[in-house]
Image (cartoon, rainbow, N blue to C red; front, side, top):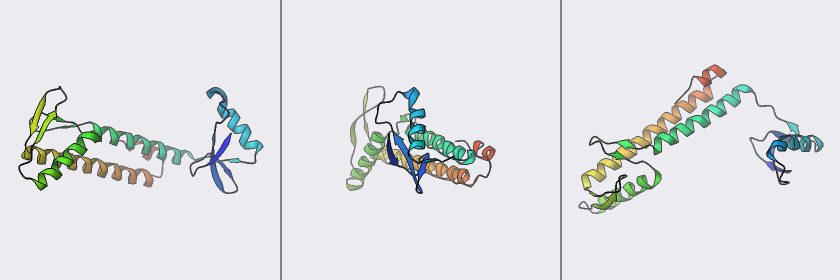
Length: 165
């Protein structure tokens, strides 16, 4: 085992928290017991995280995953067109908006739709898509921030579990 300093580590020695890296290729079934044996033989103390902190950490992780899913899940425009909101699309629309700011007649040519067909995106459509994506991203970040503050302020496990995306 190799001790790795880690603020969230499960083991502590001389006031520093650690986790252990399995460098001996111990099987998954046996690694937990091997880590415990190594820790106890080498003077480490196990840190027992209380259930409330564990619930908070788990809930924050779930909220982040939900936010990511919504962020990348796409937007339906008024026309019924589904605008993807994955990283590449957001960057392409942002780049197109920068081009449009420099050249008001700029058209994003040969945009491939999810069905494989190609379209040209007009300046009005670029601006609409850019604004929709920007507001979508901002709303998700604000929601995540608001819920994270609620999680951190919660005083019971039940309160934490009631905070959902």
